[in-house]
Amino acid sequence: MPTLTTTGEAKRAVLYRMVMPEHICPYGLKSLDLLRRHGYDVEDRHLTTKEETDNFKKQQGVQTTPQTFIEGRRVGGHDDLRAFFGSPSTSKNAFAYWPVIAIFGMAAAMAVSLNIDSTGSMQVVKLAEQFVAIAVCLLALQKLRDVESFSTMFLNGGFKTEAQHVVIEREQGPAGPWPASARTPPAAC
Picture 1: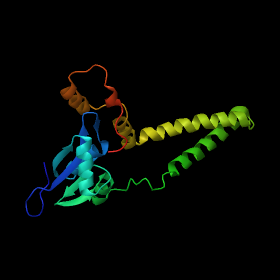
Picture 2: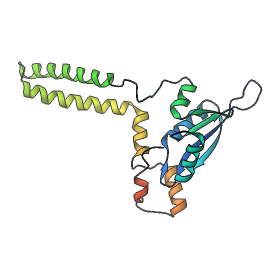
Picture 3: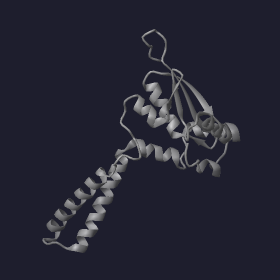
Picture 4: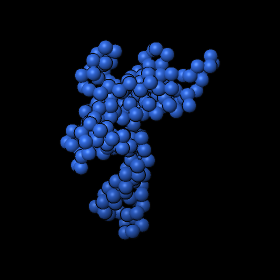
């Protein structure tokens, strides 16, 4: 149910996003969810072909989709929408190596402790093996902890959601194995 403004009207947004038989933009899905969670009644406009998407981007003077409009003003893409709602930035320019540095430091400390405890002395080859094993396990745990990036990996990769399966089936008929086009999404939305 949409949230009402101070004048009693529902908060409205218009979202333009790519929804093609072979690709549904994950950032469009995230933007749609973000708008709904903030109480907006969303007019969800699908860009269903590459030509339609290219024309929209040219007309709006933007490089990517999705694009969100609130009260007739363009807010921008998914990162801009997050900023509009005061969410932390997911900018690619942000320094993101601290978790990896911390993981490697912890892996090194654990490997040294394990090496000395198990052998009674420092054995360099064994230490290196233990460090790699511990670091890989900790990195895997970190990857699983970041659910948003983990789920986006599936949307961007060869795994299809139920909604994508329905769209493909509606247009191409029931297909056993996925067509090659469904396994290779466009590089960007």
